[in-house]
Amino acid sequence: MLRTEGFRKYFANTSWMFADRVVRLGTVLVTGIYIARYLGDAQFGQLNYAAGFVGLFFALTAMGLDEIVVRDLVKHPDRRDELLGSAALMKLLGALLLAVLVFAGTFVNHMDGSTTIMVMIIAAAELFKPFSVIEYLFQSQVKGRWISQVNIVQTLVSSAFKLALVAIQAPLIWFAWAYVVDTLAAAVGFQVAYSGMGLRMREWRTSARVLRHLLQQSWPLIIYGVALFIQARIDQVMIHDVLKHRMGEDEAFAQVGQYSVALKMIEALGFVPVVVQKSLAPAITRARMEDRGKYQDRLLNQYRLMFLLFLVTAVPLYFIAEPLIVWLYKEPYREAGHLLALFGIRLLFTNMGVAKSSFITNESLFKYSLFTALIGAGVNIAMNYLLIPRFEASGAIIATIGSFVISIFLLDLFFKDTRANFGWMMKGMFTFWRLHTVR
Image (cartoon, rainbow, N blue to C red; front, side, top):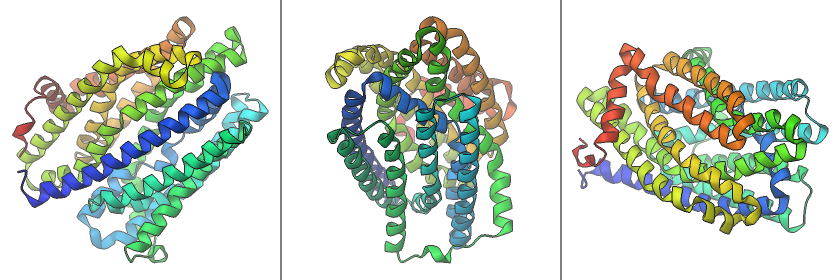
C-alpha cells in the first residue's frame, strides 16, 4: 500500500495541508498571544464576544456546501464552472442574510454601541466568502499544495496587520477590522491561484437546476451548521450574558477573555483531525462508489486514527495546560490554564465528530445530522443556563462536552441507519492500534 501511486498522492496532499496548519498554528498563536497581552482579558473578551456572536450565523455563508460540492466535483468534473458559480451565488446570498440577522440581533441582545460596531464589521468580512468555493475544486483534485499556499499567505498578511495594530497601540475597534483583512486576503489568494491554473472566474455560470440541486442537498446542512455553530460558539456569548448581571460588564467580558484564550489553544491543537478528514474525504467517497467493504474499512480506520490523535494530544495537555498558559500569556491568564486542561476532554468528541462527517455525507444522512445538531444545541444552551452561574466559564465547557456526548454518540443508537456507525466508532476507539488493516 505504501508504494502505490494513490497512497503517495494522498500522503503528499496531507503533508502539504499539515505543513500549512503548522505554519498557521505558529503564526496565529504568536499573534494571538501579543493581542491578548495587549488588550487584557476584558477587552480581549469583548472582541471575542463580538466574533462569537457573528459566529452563531457562520453556517449561512458556509451554506452546507463544502463536502457536497467537493463530492459533486469528484463525480462530475465536467460541470466545474456551473457548480462553482452556483455555489458562489449561494454563499453571497447567505452572507447578505447573515448581515441582516446579525444587525437585528444586536438590538434584540441590547448590545452597547462599541460592541455593535465590532459585530457589524466582523459580519462584513463574510461578504468575501464566495471566493472560497475555489478551495472546493482544489480539494476534489487532491491539490492540497494550492490550498496551503493561499492559507499561508493569508495568515502572514492577517498576522502582520494585527501585530502592526499592537505596535501602534491601536484602539480595540481596529482589531475587528482584522477579520475583514483576513477574509479579503484569502479571497485574493484563491483568485490568483485559480488564475494560475489557467482558469477564469468569468466563465462561472449559475443554473436554476444546479441551485435547486445544491439547495435540496444542503438545506438540512445549513440548519445543521447553524445548530452546530450555536453548540460550539454560544458559550462565548452566554458566559457574558449570564454573568454580567451578577459580576458586572467588565468582569463578564474578562471571563469570556479567559475562556477565549483556552478555546483558541484547543482549536489550534485540533487542526490535525480536520487535515486528515479533508485529505481522506475523496478516497472515502470513491470507496463508497466502488466497494462497500473498502468503504467501511476506511471509515473504521479514520475513527481509529482520530482516537489515537486524541490520546497523544489530550493526555499531555492535562498536565502542562496551566504552566503553558502562564508561560505564554503571563500570570493574568492563569485561569485560562485550568480551562484548557478541561477542554482537553472535548478533543475526543470534536475528533470523532469531524470523522463522522464523512459517514454523514456519503450516506446522505443530512436530515439526521440536522436532528442531532438541534438536539445538541438545545442541550448545550440548557446546560449553560444551569452550569455557568455556578461554575462560570468552566460550566460552559462541561455543558459543551455533555451536549457532544449526546449528539455525536448516543443518538446513533436510536436509528437503524446509524447503529452501524456507532459500532464503527466504538470499534475504532477500542482497536485504535490496528491502522495497518487499511485496504
